[in-house]
Amino acid sequence: MAFALSLFGATSFPTICHSVVTSPLEAAALFRLGELILDGRLLQYNPSQALIYFSKAADLGDRTARLRIAEMSLRGIGTEPDIDQSLKEIRELAEEGSLSALVSLGDVYALGYAGFIDTNAAQKAYKKASEAGSIAASLRLAEIHRYGLFGRKNARQAYRYLAHAKSLGNSYALYLMGTGLVEGEFRQIGRPRNGLEMFRQAEDLGVADATIALAMRRNNRSAQLLPRTKLINKLSGMADNGNTDAALRLFDYYLDPKNWGARQPSTRNIDRAGTLLQKIADKIDPGELDYRLLLIDILSSKKSAYPPLYERIEKIPPRSRPSLMRRILRSNPNTFFYFVQMRLAENGHFTGRMDGLLKRRTISAILNYCASLRVKSLCRSGPLSVQTTRLLIHAF
Image (tube, rainbow, N blue to C red):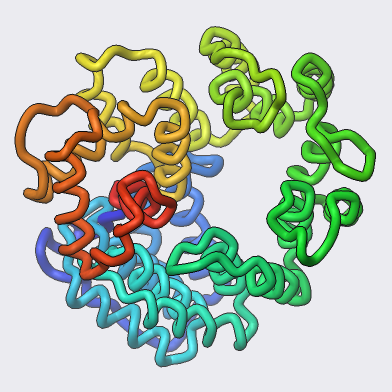
């Protein structure tokens, strides 16, 4: 995510007036407008416009707006990056007591946004924020331990951090705990039927994903997914009754049926996915629509069309890009590695013909990229490991 504001100059970090707040309500409104635009929620994604609103909010004393500007400048989103000054700003905000900045600092260390990775510093920042009451930090720590992102998996520790997020008032953590139980990841802690109960609790608290999860699974001890036909009929009925979340989950199934764990998965059906998306286009956020339209185009295109599709990735809200790349990896690994070759070529790590094949030259380029981030050991499990693909996914 490269966010810099051309308004302030291409290479210089914007000077922000850290004045006494003169209008907190106005600052909050301006910040919210910037967030909506940056995330493509309700409004079309436009990083330059988002930065203008963040700048106005920052001038009124909004610290989180200062953080967004620094994050964008760090990653070069909407402007030329200024890593050193941006990182300095994020650190200063964290030292001033901003938990959001502390989480952001953890992200910088964990994902290589500043050109290096420091897993120890990332965990230290997340833990400090989590102990101070940050839900976001608790969820990140749960993910790290659940999937073994920095080393071995630790299901108990992951569950503890999810439980901590729940205790802080996060209802979605209940859904994540339930998912881990029904999928057998937390088998040392509880049974699938316990996961169904957590789904019910999360549904009562308004978590839409929990409603979908309950509809997709049998109400029995093993909480198995419904057979393919019943699953599709159930989601279709919910979608026809106006449940947009069910429609989006059905869209996911049509594009990615083999990764749903069904005993009899069907083949990909891009036409059905496209038709369904057209029906709900006016009910979802602009950024969400653009992301899913691009996903359809990528999965239905030939290799000759990849370069212009690659350019469109930059027009997707940054929050959606990791999900986009993860879906491409699952659905068509060769396409994913074609895009990785293009990205690593920009960074000077890959040379040669773009073919999307995971051969020696591509593997070598990926290892060089890991080495440039100072985490070659993190990639030692291979280019298809969870740790390596996560780094590649967040390179976009």
